[in-house]
Length: 323
Image (tube, rainbow, N blue to C red):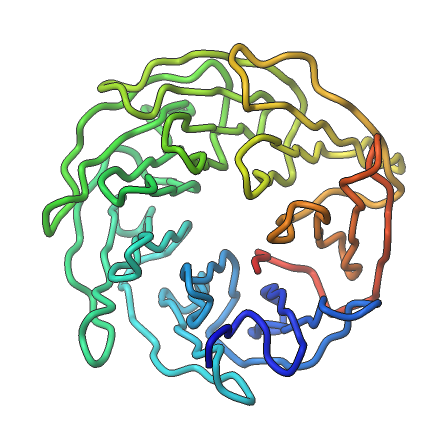
């Protein structure tokens, strides 16, 4: 199959059903998104990610301390392996070379990064490396597969607002540096396509942009405020969308930041009747897909400000979303 991202004209989006112990497959290649498959996985699935070629989907099962690996080229799609982690997983990332999966675990494991070897006939746990802190919620890998960026973790009963950087060229990660951010509770981290910026967003508000090539990373810019419930970087690495927790009974609030230039400028803010949740961009950046409760919402990102282009009722709530 030359393009597993499309099958018989379909283009797929995946989201995890936290309470349904399954992953929903949505066809977004037609006029209106449509759920076409449901795949049973482990208990309480949350973050999920595809490899670069879109042939595999990796799902964190928080409730069963494992990850499920799904073959997306088959019809129907199926779980081909489940790897036990022996610790509560939080975040997941696949290296661009598609040979390793990195998973952050804790707190029962006292904080660790586990590597799963994808080159083996059956994927296996390759190594487990203790890390500083316990609750690492964000992982991102540089485009050259040499650095792993990690955010989060409590320290002495306070929030350890840090970005840690690991050398992953060897069999086990080696800590290069850990730098403090300017906001509380780091949740998300992403690296742009050029590998020049590492962008961390924080649950208690704010965006920190670091020089990803420097050792230690240098904080270049910080902006924004408000409790964050979702975040997504456009495929070309130029726009960052932040979804802020709406006031009780109020609308969802969103900010769009141009991260192609540093320092960051003032964001474009807009509101929607849909509360923010897990979100991801379409491959061309023209759509932003977001789970809002039991609704899959598609924003038209070519509009200024973005407008809701479509929405469909699905089975939520979602723990994660990806293409």
